[in-house]
Length: 209
Ligand SMILES: *[C@@H]1O[C@H](CO)[C@@H](O)[C@H](O)[C@H]1NC(C)=O
Image: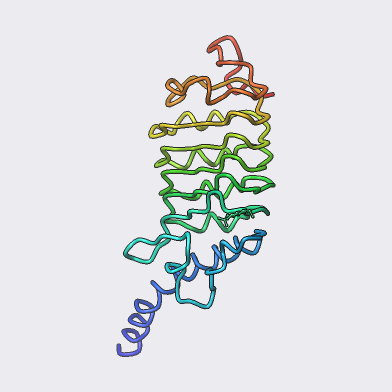
């Protein structure tokens, strides 16, 4: 019996440290993809026990990362799948940088995300369908990028979504009209190659482009 309880208490003791380290590792992997000419990420020291003392990172009382605040930070480079490992993240603020490349579909793993602000970057490719898993999402701002493809119909299931802005991209197809899309203003969609609101019953439901 003694060895089993020893093993158990060992795991109970180390598991919180392991989980926070995995978030630190994810952030450090993210940093390695970035160019950071003005050293905004200088405090991101991977040898610390957790990332909670790093600048622009906020943790909750359990040392889980809940905010990443890197808006307007002169950052370029790309995003990678490791961002999807920040399981407790509520705020992903990466607006007004020079971030390029595709949006990783793994961002759809961020089940607690309330706000994703990636406007004014150079993001390309499609809006991932996996964003339909972000059931807590209230704010999704992807405007002023170089996104293409259609707006995933799956996003109409995001019932908490209050603000959605994809203006100034290269999106095509029709604008969804169901769910939260009933209340978004036309300005959220302007300056794309969109064909206006979907005419229900007249065009195929998954009308692409
Ligand atoms: C971004 O770069 C500009 C120009 O080099 C500089 O003035 C500004 O302080 C930088 N911003 C940050 C957050 O470092």
